[in-house]
Amino acid sequence: MENLDLFFEKIAESIQQDNFVKITLSKPLSKRNDLQNVYVRLIKIKEKDWFSFTYRYQTNDQVKNYSFTEMTNLFTELLQDNFRFATLFTLQKDVQVFISKKKKITIKEQHPSFKNKLPETHNQPKQKRVVNGKYLEFLGVTDTNGNVIPKMADKYRQINKYLEIIDNLIATSSLPKQINIVDMGSGKGYLTFALYDFLKNTKNLNITVTGIELRPKLVNYCNDIAKKCDFTNLIFECKPIEKYTNKRIDILIALHACDTATDDALYKGITSNASLIVTAPCCHKQIRQQLKGKEPKNPILKYGIFKERQYEMLTDTMRALFLEKENYQTKIFEFVSNEHTRKNVMLVGKKSSKNIDGNQISKKIEQLKSDFDVTEHYLEKLLK
Image (cartoon, rainbow, N blue to C red; front, side, top):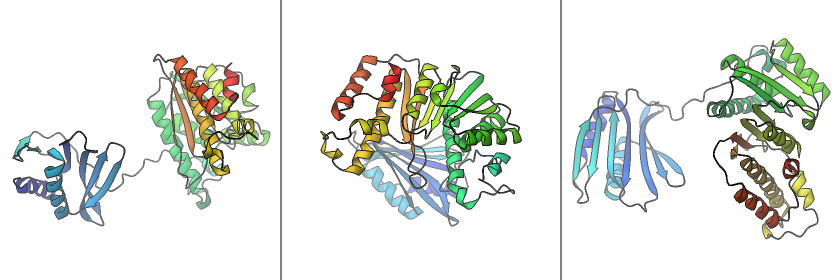
């Protein structure tokens, strides 16, 4: 194969002129090749230029950094063995390299695709959504100067992650102009206050937020803070989830509501036809108690620690399937890293207008019940 010196000169020239954007490698030589694309951007590490390669495989991405010399050697190998096409994007022009089957190189230039450069930091700084409001001081997250108290750093991180998730979910959901949000099992209200402040005062949305909590002291405590902060459309009510009667719920939230309280909240969201349901399930006693004393069919359930995890997965998978049967698009993902808390799973349902095969979903549910000797899921009982 002809050498790629001219292409590398163009890369060096774009860096020198400070208009380098990125490089891509595409069109794999074989469809069976697990490596689909390679994306290259310029980053700075300790004031030195490095080429950050993102290798995109069918099932995962891998990132590695290389010097200019290492990059040129790697490119030669990749265009020899893996790809037919490479493009250098700069602010002045795009430079395309095509490798024929006979390994002949064709280089041509086109008008630029980009008007702006990519960030040169290795990791883009995450946008903080928490504004240091007075409520954080009242809740003991920050001091009087607005600085996060060290032992509350994980909580502050969790609040930011939560708001990031909610922000993205609301952006892709169909919601009315006036949004009624109910947070069931609101506890001390860390996330409830942060959500209200962010949506009302940062996003300028027309919202009302109601926190539902069983413990009178916490309800009084939170209502007092809401009053001090002048959060006029935020109120906390003392009652069990199943006693909440307002049928207008646009966004239902239930974070770490214990045991079947998560199912009570899901039921309220479903029967209210909520556009968005956001839960972080806590303990999963109901299924586990049903199977006490039964000899497990599956050997993976022989050991206690695996049994516990399996029942959590089973409980939440069935919850997701019941939501899907009610025309919700569902996903289950990690809320925050295990490094910060074990209660890190989030189950989300977004109301959909697409047609669903309810019978097929019912079969999946019945198959799970049969495989694990489950008599009935509590949410299933409520929906009946």
